[in-house]
Image (tube, one colour):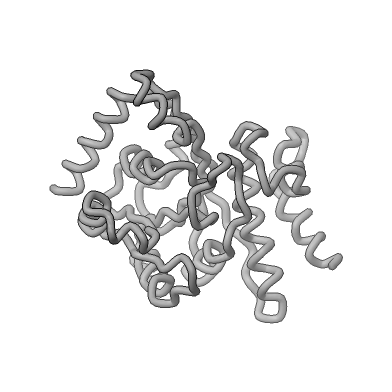
Length: 237
């Protein structure tokens, strides 16, 4: 009941205060475990995702620093958020996230670990690939833009335009023990390049020119091209 009330309030605020363009929402499964990976531009990004996905079993990994916020802390706790120590390998949080996924939930993760100050993508941490492998779940790449200037526009009495696009769920290749670090990086790059492919070029940042991104943006490429190319790059190292 509380979750539904919070979603209604947040959804209403977005409808009143912003112009939100949504695409690909139908690609998000209504049930079953999956990871939702998104770029991170603003504190309102998680609220937008939560407002749009009407699942009772959705939560997110949240940076531990927000425990100090009298507004954010109770909301995260009410929605079952998983607190994460960003500066270290938080094994407890990763284990809790894996257990949540194994119970069939949808978990939101920002692979970059923190908000991008420039708006462009920054190099992601490999925790997202680790979780996807350990929990054996699909990943839904999700791209958001426009939220980075939303607060400034609202203060000027302008309704900001926000865009969010959900990509097709992807199943990543397994992580092998013999090539663990390379495999984790390969899968992380795959996720981030798929997010980048749904963003305007000025947001590509650290993944601009990445061969996987170039393959994804080629309209004549086969669906498997990106993963195949990434695998070939790893083998050639």
